[in-house]
Image (cartoon, rainbow, N blue to C red; front, side, top):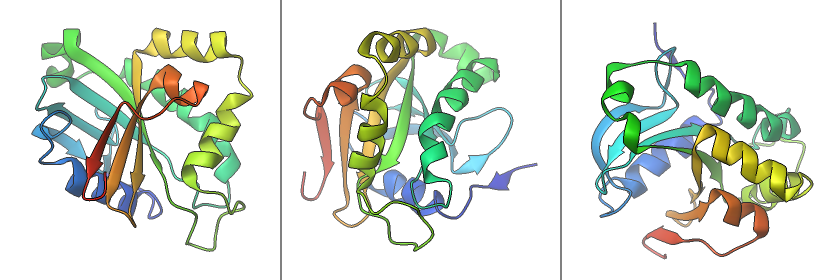
Length: 177
C-alpha cells in the first residue's frame, strides 16, 4: 500500500516535478513514481528525456531531525539496490541515482537549523573524506544531486563529486536558471 511522503518533503517533490517535467535533458519522459513511498520505488523515479533512468531520494532539512537527514540519505541510497521492479530490470544499464534536496532556507519552524538547504547538506558532506564520498557514490551509482528552490522555481543539478567539492552546478533548470 502506498503511503504519502512526510509533509515536509512533499512540497519539494511536487516542485521538482513541476519544474523538471518539460526540460529537454532531465524532463520526465515516463513517470514511474513521483512522491509515493513504497517498497519497489524511490521517492522520485522516472525515465528522463535524455534516456537515463533516474532514481532519486528526497530529503529535507525542514524537520526536527534535520541533522539526521544528512546521514539517512546514504542508507536510503543503499536500500535502493535491494528494490526490484520490471522498470529497473528493463533499464538496468541506464540507471543513475540522485538526491533531491531543497535550496531554500527552512520555513516550517520545525527545523533545528536556519541554513539554506544547499549550505546545510554541503556543510555536512564536506566533513566526509573526499575519497570516501566519491567511493560511496561509485558503489551505489550516485550521479546527481538536485538542489530545488521552491521559491525561485529552479533546479540546480550537481555531479555527485562536484557537490562535495563545491563545484558549480553542471546544469540548471527553471525560470531564473
